[in-house]
Amino acid sequence: NKLIKFVSFFNTPSHFLTKLILPIIEINVNPFRLFFLFQKMDFFIKKCIIYFILIYWRFFMRLLVVSDSHGYDEELEFVLKNITYDAAIHCGDCHFDKKSSFLKLFDVIVQGNHDEDFLPLEMTFKTPLGEIFICHGHTFHVYKGYDELSRYINKKNFSICFHGHTHVPHIEKFENILFVNPGSIMFNRGLSECGSYAIVEINHKIEVTFYDSRTLKKIPQSVIDKDQDILNEFKLFAK
Image (tube, rainbow, N blue to C red; front, top):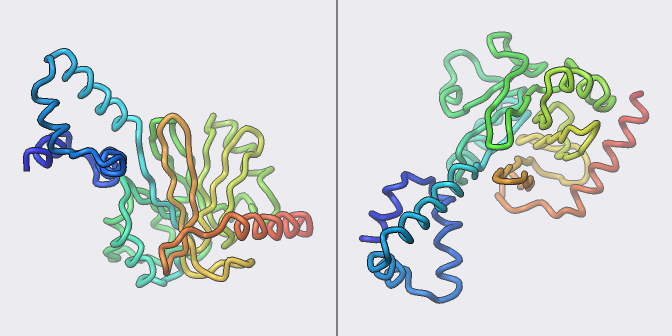
């Protein structure tokens, strides 16, 4: 109980506590003993430890990024209820109306080519690495590549972009901009044969992992790579 009170003092999200506590458990150190030792420490050392934890927490963010759910609300709800995240972002083609209960569950929702026009076409989201530009991608013709979108983003000085539209989980650095497409939570084109979402972890760098929206299991990188190759071939054809 003392340990729980100690960590809850920081009001940290559960995934942060997991990252903090699991390494302690893995090396077979009793966390209650560590807490007891912490109580015995010099005040200055305590202050330094707390400062380090707060700094780490301040610069750590875990984002859930989804797109192209196309009214598959059960799959969307399943993901939202079963994973931990600091913020949820929907990159469009959600099929929400103005009364949808999902509107309150997302920090960012943009308009896709199958959405109502009460949603914005583009938004930004603040992170420890700066603001992220978010759009669906259809107005920038992302099926043809990132030429048009990168020109637009570079004028606004963003270095990270989340988008959807292609139904292919994809990550690519183009013109000094990191593009992340979580794929379709409904169903993807390509070889993955599943719906997908992305978990984006941000601290001093950005890490992107794609997951199956029905099993919540990580999609093998080999499958992601093959789907990206197929998408690249399609882009050449579309041009």
